[in-house]
Amino acid sequence: MIDWQAVMQSWDTQQTAYLPAREDRFNTMLDVLELHFGQTPFTVLDLACGPGSISGRVLARFPQARCIAADLDPVLMHLGKQTYGEHDRLTWLDVNLSHPTWSVDGESNPVEWLQTQRIHAVLTTTALHWLLPDALVRVYMQLGELQQEGDVFLNGDHMMFLPHMVTFRAISQQVRERRHQRVFEEEKKQDYATWWAAFRALLLQEDSQYYGQLLQERDQRFADRQRTFAKPIRAMHEAVLSSAGYLEVAPIWQRYDNCILLGVHGPHIQPVVY
Image (cartoon, helix red, strand yellow):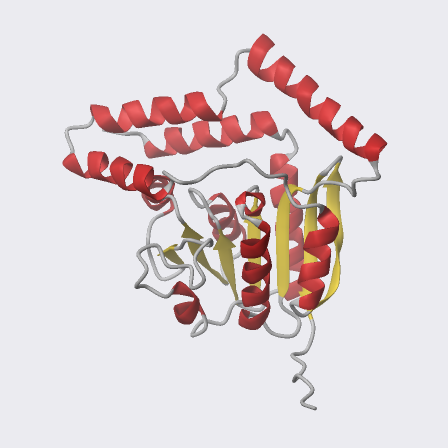
């Protein structure tokens, strides 16, 4: 029998090896929610949630909160379901952010369903840099339509400095390379690839056709996924969020080029018709 709590702990350990300040980044995002919403009930869209790391922390800290955890990866979401459950405070949603309606099968319409929900906060970490620029712009504009005045958007990720900030870029890159050298080559800690290999092997050890099908579904969903383009610069994130209706947009936390970008939604403005 799989110890799902142990698997989730191994996920957290592996992710923290890449970003030692990962838990501080999570805590900062949750501090923003506490200070912004107080004791008022609110709903969080945990976008590109993976195994629901944000949702688990939000629900543990805020008894008045509800989360919608959305991702493309059925295996990581299964890990999250086994760890955090499925109940009235936590809904899991299959999405493909590269599709115009976020559909994973070309028929479902997660965006339309989300329009029936009241999304007070969108939180995401280490995920949206995987989107092509046109998809990222579309997703931000869609989020702007989903949210209302006073709602917040929080994205914790690596966001490149402007191209002319060569010293800033070089220092950030060197810090990252030194950490990877120490953690993965010298200390031999588990990296993303080896974690996945171990988790896949663990699932396949189980006498369950379901896990084989789940892994096959994941392989199909990610078959065409490639990362051959540069991560969007922070200025692009800021400009698009501003265009999407977030009147206040700026980093609220930062470690080198890893930051939390906070957007606070303004009032919806009707377009001028000439």
